[in-house]
Image 1 (spheres, rainbow, N blue to C red):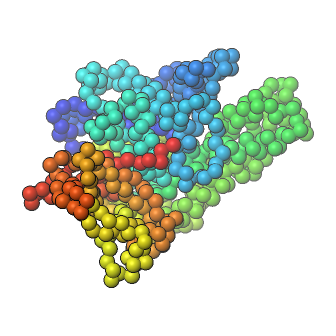
Image 2: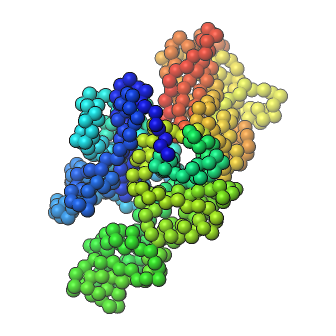
Image 3: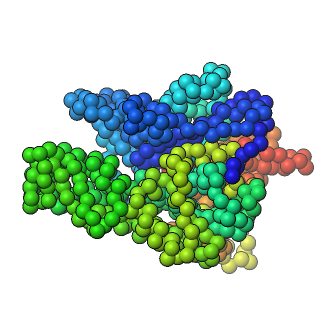
Length: 593
């Protein structure tokens, strides 16, 4: 089944680039939109440093960089892998940076985790920007060399649209960080129009679009069927679930909030390294060089080929003189019990199975399909164990034959071309702070009388109220919100001086258990500012009045938000001469690292 079969209806050619920055590897796909032509999604299959048969037409490169002592980028991706580069890096004291993506994660995901440090005086956002700069250049070079029309579009200087994927547990603050990185990488300008060139999609949703576009059977996409996506990546395990609404054209809605678990393949490596350091303690093979050589072989050979805990496993790291029978080392090869290798996977397996149990709770097994995608899903051992789990639950597990390493990048483009998810689950109970006019007949107002204040219009207001905009309903499931559904709240502004006029309205989130909370001081730890909606209303929209302390300007603005999209959108509205008008607004997150 192909999602998008209609010719492009635009009047000018446009280039769209989709970028998947993974914890360990990343990929890029592109599409040239040509008027009257059916769009084609194409992966970038050639990067510098991939020369040679073993790397020909590889769609991914490592998410790693070398910085020199002046903190200038010296090697990126596959160009950072050759032995000659590693030797030069050692001699010239370059710094190797990896796993920078995990430093951008929300604080709620794996709090207090020990990650490889970033040993350069750059933030994770700046490192991400350096990597994006490299990726976009590689993509442009590839397109110019392989796609004549794409080369023409690039030569024209026309703005490029970008789609960036991110883990399912990332929300507005993390998207804001990625947008900042894109601006630093000069992918987009830091303007309202520039921000609109960058789109976001979760890795799980991108993976589903990839699977749909590449031929899921009709049995899977029947109405009322449930599709769970298990995107098993290098750093994160992303689980998301969708209920099919119709099969032709395909349409689905998110049925439960997605989860992102930091239990990917790099965590298996961390367990393996800890095991090796403990096992070899007391031997002469505990140097950083020896452990590094062991881990390189483990990651490249032992882990991806491991399938049977009953069989011995081997890690090659040295030469004929490297032998110590007491530690199972002979001629540079360490022999390990297969059960020990299997134990490195156990926490990840348990997390995946527990996560899928929660995602599929209440779903009839005969209606459920689990799609396995991502680089970690290629592990024979992991795949076998998850198949056993699926069989025990009576659900069907589907592992695509196609190259799933390109699933997220290509799926992100399919999402951009033909988004088939029409509703998503609200991640929070959304609301706004309100300051109602003081009512002496209301005991809640009387109780807060000492906090009351007088507004410029002379009315007495009570601060600290909360008005629910979108209720999350059941905390474990959430509320389904259609992507076009708009929610609004009134934001009254009062200003004594015209030069101070602007709009900055807080969108609050509530994480308590009360269905409709009214006052924030009753559960102060359950409320927090999710983001700010900022705008510069036209001067003519303000109304002038005389108050007890002098003239003032005021207006009751509607703050309009959409929370059913992959990224929150906002506008402001107001009434002027009996006409409801709207203006653009910006969503700003202030907790970026």
